[in-house]
Length: 259
Image (cartoon, rainbow, N blue to C red; front, side):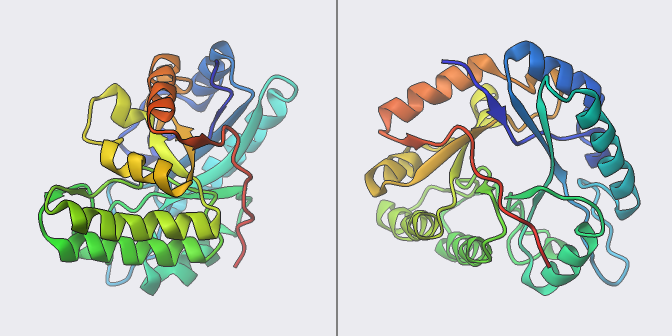
């Protein structure tokens, strides 16, 4: 089986990816993709002069969109190019964020909750912890995000590496998975985690997904053009999906982003 769709792709505007958009597209076509979605780390509206160093600046947004619009037209008939963002859900700033990104074309959002509460406090989600409150806050916040109906899918949903009591793990991650089922939001098997042997995709998390009937999808999380279509990691992810009895949606329906 071949990978045909990847909606999780970054650009140099995030300050931690490499390669041109054209290189990503050419590699995606060579790998057999029929649809490639760019979802760079979204610009966000913060206050008091806070600057986020891992996402595109507001000033880069127009160039991001117009560059992809031109390439979409150039590659029409060869591959379907979609323009999106990976974004956190920060309730205090979310309306301003939506107002910002909808100034230009945006086809979809994926949820990637890299920080809990909000980024200014720097409480990174990808920690190893036995603190139940940390996991509980992450789940509460991301469930609220999914209920907005604006996110096409949830990237690396198992980002908090909770290694405490199994019952607490199942309690809170079970709530997240249940919310995803209710909101019909696919949960991503993240190929960056697969190819770098990170703690995610987390076996216990996706075993729960299988037991609860959650829908999952697969995203490359490409930060370099050579993995815009990552066939070796995709095949490993499909083996995981079979092992955990997962329902895989290979082409998630893009949800309209509106303010």
